[in-house]
Amino acid sequence: MPVFSASPLLDQLEENLFSALEKMAAQIDTSQRPLIDLSSGSPRQPTPAAVVATLQSAAAQPENHDYPSFWGKPTLRQAIARFYQRQYGVELDPDSEIAVFHGSHIGVTGLPRALLAPGQYLISTDPCYPIYRSAAAQAQAKFYGISLHASNQFLPDFTEVPKAVTQHAGLLMLNYPHNPTGAVATPQLFDDALAFVQRLNIPLLHDFAYSAIGRHAQDAPPSLLSQPEAKEWSVEIYTMSKTFLMAGWRFGFAVGNASVISAFKKLHTHSYSTVFGAVQDAAITALDLPESEVAEFAALYHHRRERVIRALEAMRWPVDARQGTFFLWLSVPAGYSSQQFTERLLREAQVLVAPGHGFGAGGEGFVRLSLTASDEALDASLKRIAALKLFS
Ligand SMILES: Cc1ncc(COP(=O)(O)O)c(C=O)c1O
Image 1 (spheres, helix red, strand yellow):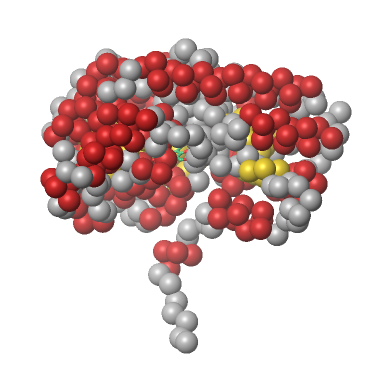
Image 2: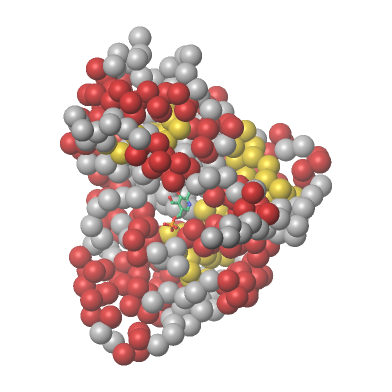
């Protein structure tokens, strides 16, 4: 059988972090105890019943059996506008300021492709959600990650970006609450980011994947778009995967600056497919759910985080209790790289975490632990890790 060479573009794409972890886990002997996976970012809880019920009835509607529109149903775009108005006090024009797509992965890779010229810089953070680096590569752009440090609450300092990068900057891309560090944006961060993009005359993309999960059970993290002038300079990408427990449904949307939305919509008609009409109807139900349902989910992660933090403190694993998202970003003990420490936990505790270096060189020295596993699985995994007595 002939072996064909792939496009040179593929040489520039790193192996997907989670496929690499899957391979690593497959080599571990789990005959004595099952593997506990604390690496995944999937909420692993059932989607709200009302959303499932809408999908069931909408699947039977003949109008949903034809090709869906690239732009999404007007009723869906109106529901998104209602949601942003209610939740963040932001007014959106459903026709020109909203794009819908099949999961926000498409937004975070497609928007940079729609905006960047070859050779320009996509500026983000280091560490960051790994797909941002491949989004730059897919746009034939360069990636520059602003180093994040615990001493600065993992918030970027834009004055650190060298002139050689700012001169060729095409896009700033942020994500707060931040994956993987759990950092939550301050109003100052958004002010600084807006001043930075205004100075460079470039757009700002904000990936708001962890919109529902802040530091406290009751405080929803702020949307970039609720800052003054933000909608003129930026687009926010939203996913239904986390907030509405709809990871398998593949639905996300982007809102904000009309010229950016219009550029993306053009690319969308060439590169991506559309969203099943019944999923769109279900998304409307989700967006109109009473706030108490989302608050319940945020509270669950808050309690889980508190409980895990207590267990980590008991085994003397240092932890910063101020984190958002459903991840904990934990430093590895002295003498280990993040990969070595991940392998040790896997071999000796059969617990899989995500090594920090997978999120960029700036993630070295950390591992990311996910709170999406059940309370029982989290308790069992922490007991196994404590028994290794790795922290003194
Ligand atoms: C920061 C961030 N952005 C985007 C995504 C993609 O979300 P989805 O494609 O499920 O909408 C994820 C998923 O883990 C994420 O962590």
